[in-house]
Length: 263
Image (cartoon, rainbow, N blue to C red; front, side, top):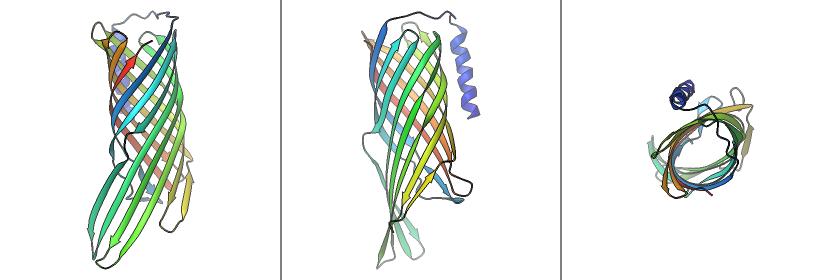
């Protein structure tokens, strides 16, 4: 996390160095609907009672992210909803002593956020908000020894929610576009539920959880009030459900392309 924070402040200094300190006083109401297409990779790395679980996968998937931003003067609020276009799916075949094991796995992750921000300076803003993420994994493991097969399905449901706060900075390059960067810290709660092939269900509640995210984006004008945006985002969330019980490490990274229309 320290490297990302240092990178953020280094870029922020560059962005701030060549710009005026005086803040603008724009009292008009601005409404900005937008939509993004994001290419992502994430995982849900589990350590159960000190043993790393083999249910963890690193899926690559595509999501669509509609958003709505409303700004008035130095204040703004934004809603966004991130949902995959399709469910990620993979099949793994492993050779073990005297038997084969087939793992059929699916992965689905959704995320929604509510953000409120305040532009302290034309190039510096503060923001805070609420985030909720839902991850679903189905792992159907089948052992086959040549004559019989033994299915071992496992359903995993993981819901995280919490609050975040952060800083954003931007610099406009006249006639070309705007470069923006942000960094945020998140305080979370997580609920992990797992069901096995025997119908047993285990539920764990996090004792502590935190995370961080960083983003970098470039915005340029297409025509009139229509703008395009390209962005990079990386976040990582860490959950502790009790010493020796369960720990979860959930990194998420993505590349997005989108459009915005200013009214």
